[in-house]
Amino acid sequence: MNAVWMGLAWLAGIYLLAVIEEWGASGRFRPTVPLLAGLAHLGRESLVPRRPDRLLFEAAPPLLLVAALLAAAVLPLAPGLIVVDLATGALFVNAALVYVAVALVMAGWGPDAAYAMVAGWRFLGQLVAYAMLIVMPLTAVAMRAASLSTTAIVASQAALPNALAQPLGFVLFALAAQATCFLPPFDAPVAPGELAGGVLGEYTGVRLAVVRLARLALVLTLATAVAVFYLGGWLGPVLPPAAWTATKALAVAAAMLVAGRFVPRLRGEHTLA
Amino acid sequence: MAVRLVAVALCGLAAVWFGIRVFRTRSMVRSALALLFAMAALGGLFLALEAEFLGVLQLMMMATEMAVMAIFMVMYMMDPGGLGQMEMTHQKRLARGAGALGGLGAAALAVGLALGGGWGPISAAAPSPAAQNHDLGIELMERSMMIFETAGVTILVAMVAATAVALGRRR
Image 1 (spheres, each protein chain N blue to C red):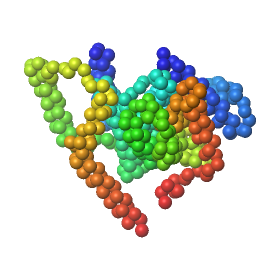
Image 2: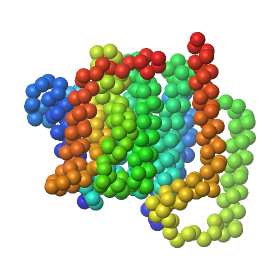
Image 3: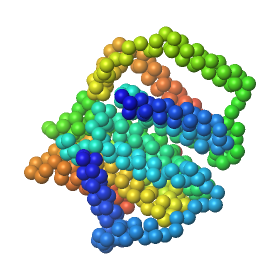
Image 4: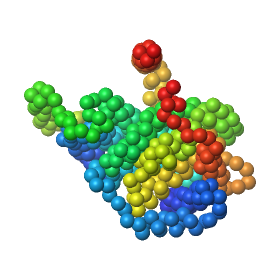
């Protein structure tokens, strides 16, 4: 039953994020656009490149979605409202997110296209650095809670949220989250205006719809992770616990979608200097 | 119990299948990804055997490691971008001999177990995952601390030394 509620909450959250993303991109608030765009994707032809590595090409979008949803499955929305309360939850979030890199390398490799391949390897090179930043701050969070369970981590922040107790970890984790969902300024792998769409360039129609859904799910998952690990999750006055988690997660997600627009893209040579 | 047995069997078969695929391909990237999924199947096997920490750690470490391995393979091998057709096997005669020996050993073990009455009594219940994590932490921080600290410092020295060598070459 929990899984059903969480699934519905996740769908609603993803839709809201899509509206916010569209709002930020076009400057106009149009709540029906994601629905229409999604339907339009389903109606369009889904092209397959001439000589694809078919298996990897087809498997990459679902794997991206599965990685995001697996990580989401161990994040609590409220006490008891969680799909699986793993004792090793905090580590599992990272384990699931590593498969984002695998999915994007597969997506870059699959279509047998130069831009996509360059973008796939680029993302891997970037994520090798930032994957460490996802897991290392979490060790400090786990030490404060004396547990790897995500619910215990939220409970440990009753006196003071981790964002205030461990500000450095909070900043590093937020940056790594931004890089993991390849949002600007870490969007070199998809690089609009430079690599012709990068890893996503060869995906069209229903496959592109899955990729875009997966990316929004990933943003929401990482925003919820920030809320759970650093902003005290469901803890807060007056409102019901689930509303607090949802509010915090959506605020973080909106910040992630908007903040990168004001920073120049981080290029490869910046990180290699 | 039956569900767990099926899960263990499926994960084991998947690990063997992906292990075979590592060598039955001519694409370096496919080979690396097949190895990754073989390792991930082993992670699933640990999870099915109620070793939660080990399973999660296996899933996490192997994905990172295999991805890093793939990028270095493509960077340094004579196969630009992993696009070429490349033979994935080598030292075939030695490999065949080792494979035959391993197969014989496994068969002997199976026969021995069948004659000798199996692995012995099965423990009734595994400790809870939280208890496993706790025990593992105590083990790492008490009895095995010296071993892990020595290994950690050695790896750190190697990393610093490798970086120093790379920087020296560039100038």
